[in-house]
Length: 249
Length: 244
Ligand code: HEM
Ligand code: FES
Image (cartoon, rainbow over all chains, first blue to last red):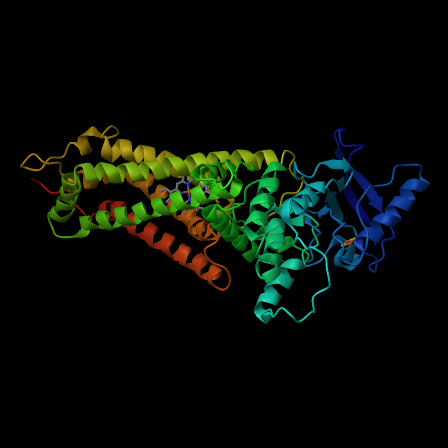
């Protein structure tokens, strides 16, 4: 099939960009969206033009490197799917597909469709971890954890940190990401000692990075490729409230 | 932000207050709590207003209005509380809106909403319109500026005739229309706002979150129906002015 792409092209972080129409002929329905872009790029290179810059790594939906807002939806039209796992069979011959970068002040565009998501790393570094003084590894089953608690923690921990939640949010808020990173420890005994400090510092860093304020639109949940639920946002709010009131950290 | 002060001393309230006023989550707590205060006021206000339907000569609502006046300083404390909630709510909304605008300096060529409800996407618009309405409403019925003829309804003993003031006021189709539209806007605002407050305060998680969603919409609907009933009843001739 033959498609027309409208792709955001921007030379570097300081240049002003614009949408460019690019033909994508002979697309196989078996290709992933990124493979389709690879083919388009080979053609562009053959014609002596600049290839489209985009982020990717594992291409199997687990690393969180791929991004793209496709026809207004981060990671495209399929629910619970990363862009690398989106297949061209969902498109029809002749379709016009608009491809834009994730948009947020905290995610500056570096080039074309590539944005700098370092803000997420800095939020993580501010408190999204459990401190461990290394020693002998504890026995795996020495610490009993209820199945229900483990499930909640594991669901939150499936966040791959891609940033689609921010891209989808009308406020460019990072609550689903931060909520997931707080919730994955909040249900486990290992997360308790640093619980207040974690949430206070991660929220402070989130605000410092210039993310917006949540208005509970729940767009984030709808686009999350790992289908993280907005209950993690309620948990983030609850933990922050508790930490404020305890005021111990 | 690590300002623990003298060793061994508890950091104190000042730090918590600072965090509430400076963090996005803290300001959302302010919005949610002040919003809850306003919802409480609106519920009380509706219960009082529905007294226009009680009895045949407007005595019930006039006695209620007199009762409020007799509270004296107490009434002013209540008014102060409502005013504080309103100021806090609008101020927090303004601060958060500014942050969120700055967080997305460049928008999308294709801007889609796939999950957010209409009410959720229009909170700022419905909020500002409700604020304008509240100002008009105060000028109209509290200060008597908008419609002096309706406002200066008196009982034979010289007390303020609230029943006739409301009924005469709502006999203007335009005035009744403004109130009808404003109540629907408030209902739209609250159909998202009530559940949003539960979420922002982190009070419920699954499976109760759905309950706050439907409960919030149900309460909003009850409020709209209750408030709308009064101007509608006047327009339909169910409530008539009483010759004193
Ligand atoms: C009788 C008047 C009002 C009541 C009862 C009310 C109630 C509420 C409640 C309960 C919330 C949810 C708090 C939260 O998001 O966690 C809310 C949110 C909000 N309100 Fe109001 N409000 C009123 C008037 C206003 C006014 C006058 C404005 C603006 C000028 C306003 C703007 C907003 C905004 C922007 C939100 C946040 C939207 C969101 O978080 O989804 N409200 N309101
Ligand atoms: S490239 Fe790794 S998740 Fe898409």
